[in-house]
Image 1: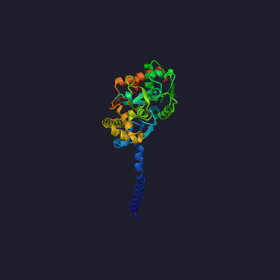
Image 2: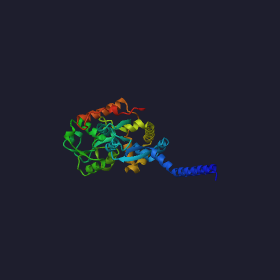
Image 3: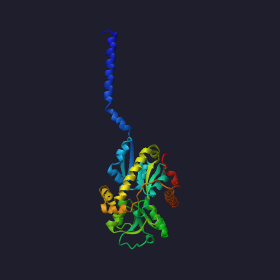
Image 4: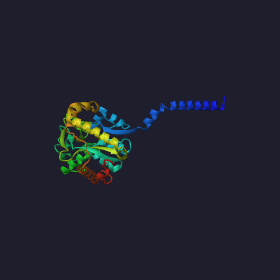
Length: 324
């Protein structure tokens, strides 16, 4: 065999080996693409617009078009959700007014993305229907159940203040909603400060009386929040998420009973009760304005004065600026 023929044979053998090597790597290509795929980790509570968004599955294809996939994590209330956000376990979530105050005092990781209008009737101080307690002033010396650091914490502060009392005039019993309801029903606490839909469920299921809701005391805004680094680096994903929330929110406002039926299986509360809660909800996702920021700052300043947070904070410093 000539030298030219031998060189040709070697070239063909090398090409064959290269083809085999490429073929062996082809099955790994999708895995590599998935490894590079960005993940958006959303935290949600058992009730609200994010539950509807998750159930409908409309967010996933919108984010997939930009190379993102979505994971969902459920939390019993706002405080643990924002603890997870501060710990880097989720990227986006929702909470009431007070949890972001505690979370910002603990870390600078979160940023406010948007809010919904006031819903002061969506939280209240309840007493058993046969209770001798007739007004907030009668709570002096009584045991009051609440979820520490949740939106109702501030309602309790304001309601007591209006009645000429302070937190030191009552015994606070910190319980998650399910445990608080059990304690409320067996008489282990005298009153319970709670938010919808647990509020609506307790009213319907126990005949509990309302001493005071948030009307004239608190706005009870709902906030959408993100990890600061996520908001800075994943702007397109954040815009898609907020637009998807606004879309579902608009539908729920116009179709309260249908939204209640859609929520009922995942929430575990009958649709008619959920319809009551949804009717008290605020609708219309929008950026934070100076008035809302000022309201949040008042909560922060109040909690700092009471020693409930360890340091003064500036809410304005945690508000996301689009494009930043």
